Image (cartoon, rainbow, N blue to C red; front, side, top):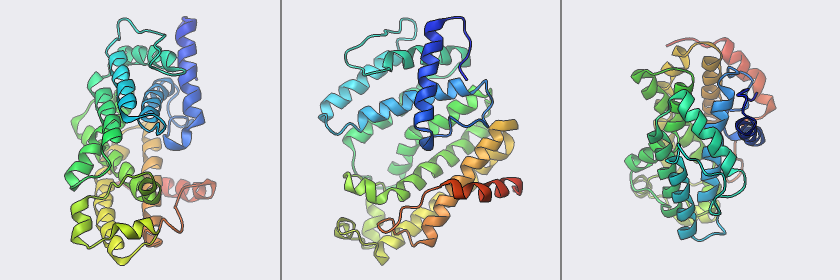
Length: 298
């Protein structure tokens, strides 16, 4: 649903963001009809901004210096709220429309630019950083790559509460980490590893086993520790799921349940993503709906 603004150019910009959300809804719950209709256009804008910037960082055919230059151009455009340029040769495709909608969403929802800056800093890090030494470094990356999205959604909903912000941070980081463990094989093939190196060394995990697609006892120990940390974050994220009212609260609970379901499935398969990458599908919907109905506050 696109907001009727009386401005055809602005409405077209929101329509472009909604289309991007629908095309990639599996990565982010922005196309869900469970979200309040007043929120959907603005959340789709946040998604479109993040999705397109992330694609710039991951464009493997371009040299790193070019990808960084394009991300710098996004940062410049982000700060050009008063005079958004529709045409910029450094920015591809529908970028002009995305930024037109973004600046209106930032204005109307009073969103802090710092959260968008954090996202862009994480995307820059994707270009230049392939390994993380400690859990602190991994979680700092999550702080900038995942947590801003949760805080932006809360602000679009009109929620400004420090306790909810911290709980949202926990669930967003948990979802990000779950995706890392789910995509361990894919990320390794692309030269990235999000498991901290000091943990890998402590457990005697051998990178040659990842090259060969072997899930060894040492790697299971590393992933078991990662699982425990991720599970703790999910539990700390229950507050925001239980405190936000209405349809957004239901959406948050479903997102939480989906992430937990993937993490549980990883554990049951011994984290062997080389043989099977667990993912959610239509068959999971009845079970998740039942879990949603039986949700109990803790």
